[in-house]
Length: 465
Image (tube, rainbow, N blue to C red; front, side, top):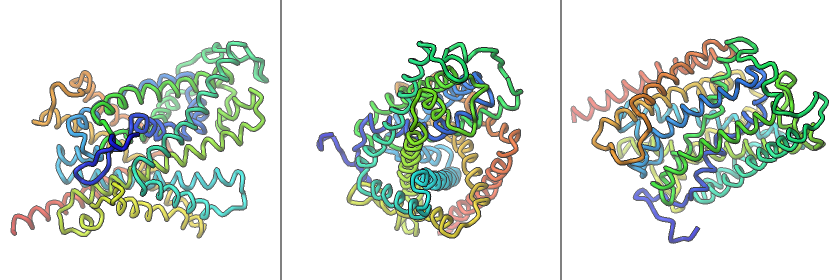
């Protein structure tokens, strides 16, 4: 990119991310270990019906992204979608959402950091996990501190590796299916997908439980909105990124799923093993496990990179919305000479040191698992709040009648909110998700109540002054 194309925002951040950077960041944040490792579990639950689950989730996420895109198009100077929640639902809800989303990001980052050490130990089993975690955390934090452009380029190449792996699987699968390659399980063929088809092969509950699993696979697609504040040509990129990114993700997911089930009849898939490894082994690639391990390592690194980027921007947003003179505002609502919220990135990274500390002390992961599950479930609440903020935007003077509007708003908006509510309710039908769902409710009630009382006391103090 030419230097002349890079402009500076009023707050000191740089608009240095191109369209390819933004789209790869969104793809990289969404396509991860859920596809490479977890797709065997989702397929085994529902069989070919998993394609319908991905399609339904894809439609609702598209509508959510169009709602976010519409607000960003009206004001592309914002660094996070949370700022719109603050603007249209009030500072109390905005403050609650900011901290909730930041907490979710940090726990997701800790999970990725923990996974990275596991993948590296595939090759170096005697290397301590905490050393691996410190090395990767230090490297990626440094990448984020240098400049947004460096982060964007790193994420581009991380995401490209994942895309190449998926395309390799799809090309291999197409060749095997069109040539009806012989496998230990029969022949590779599209007919394997719909042979003895049943909509609910393991019952309705298994089908329902696939929805939250796929929902969390799509989690992170909103990262595209967090990059717009530092994109070179925001209005053009908003349209392209929102309209094209989800389509590309669905193509990759659909293509991979069809190929996997075409080569390996879904009833023979081993949920405990990566479907990618199983397919490549059947194709005669002896190093399939090592290859996929490299891919999921870069995938986890990509996700961690995006989480650090996003967590830094959200902590900056939280601090920036607080009154001047408050400790958080004075210390973290700052932009460095490199055009990044360095102080906010550093404090977010400091929290992530909990992961190597846990590895070093062999601390129990039970509490971490519960909190991480709760933070994941809180994303559903955050997504619902951003949809409510979009409805308030439509009623405000900021609304642009000729802007980048959410299609069929009067129908799609309430449908999307209702769908998110249904997804949250389905968590209570899945035993391993009940604690996380209850934790998300407890966080909302307790922290939401504390936030409300704090904001009310601040308003009273200002009124008395």
